[in-house]
Length: 98
Length: 419
Image (tube, rainbow over all chains, first blue to last red; front, side, top):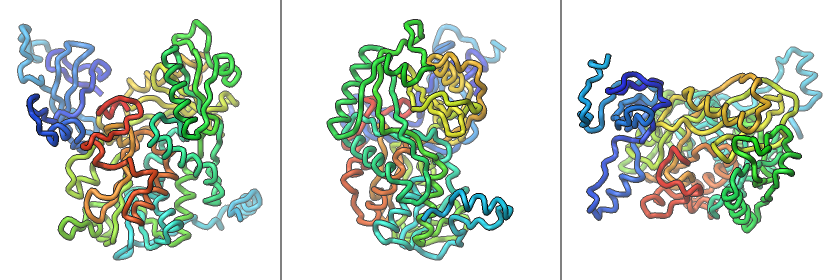
């Protein structure tokens, strides 16, 4: 499985750390809505098909990535920085690197 | 009386193997049943068997999407053990262990249950202390456990590298002598035949495509072979739990599906006569009766329904194997495969009524479902028949996560890929 990091280009999955389901919404830290917290911690969509998930390029640029990957085929249809732009001073785009 | 014998084998061989009788019928689905069990794996078949045998409910259909036993019951590494820390798990898996001990007689089908022991290796003094704690917890509940020294381990497994030069020296181990392995296909076939003989319809190539509803209540299923109604619908689909529950309108579950790979080498002469696990990673190995070393490691670690994995785990498992057994470096791997595991949020299963009226749920087996097969079927049948859990599965509710009653044997938190 290859993941194309927007900063580093296509890299082997071994360079990445899976951080799980990207659909979950963390409640406001001050929230006392237990149901919302329970749902955030325990409940998963776990789809068979396209799955929004978070990976970190821990063996590379260390950016957190929002990846859409098909759980039936392992095919990756999109990779983006979690923060939209990567927010660092290095403003390279994947095209510039290529 | 045994249905298969050396004599019948010889007689049928001489007659060209044309007279073997099928072990179960291939019926067409009826319009309605008392109970439908979705999933023709070990757990679903065991559930149907015990519904018929223990509770007299024989108007039962087992619906299987593919062929019987095509999922995890034929994809696991066949280890059977009950070496857990927490009482809820220990009691449940020890009940299962006791059922394994009589299973071949129960089913009149040789499941080749071999109590060759399961040894967890410790590589640090702290880990050895932790094993002592777990062993004591087990013995407290009447389960056998013993600590072993490196010298005893070396006598048991001569090929193991226990030298001080090993990458992770072995400082001891926790042994459960009654643990072992079983022939996994035979478990599925034995339960299937036993259920079939008691009147259960096993319907293969019948994929559930939706649920029939009357308000909230589940009243049957729609399938690739037509609609089937039932008073009770039981779901025992392991890795496909998320998919099937979404068909019923249950969007989220405390489950993630992950892929676990397993491997077998070419056949060797007798090399290891126990099940051994590595304590500094995640690796376990035994030797099959054919001589192949059967082994596996961690799940790949990302959501997957693909029944196949990627190379980094292959590499990791091989390197763990060589850390323990340097002498296996030139043994060739014969096959590898993957199965989809229903990883729960606390590493423990769910066997419960609900979550919808008329529905019963059995899931969350992580990668330990095979050893649970008898007790899972037995307690699930009880739950379906009596509409309440048995003491053995009462802790394994679906709502335990939201109620703060998790059963987290590993102490890993709500991180299913780490259980």
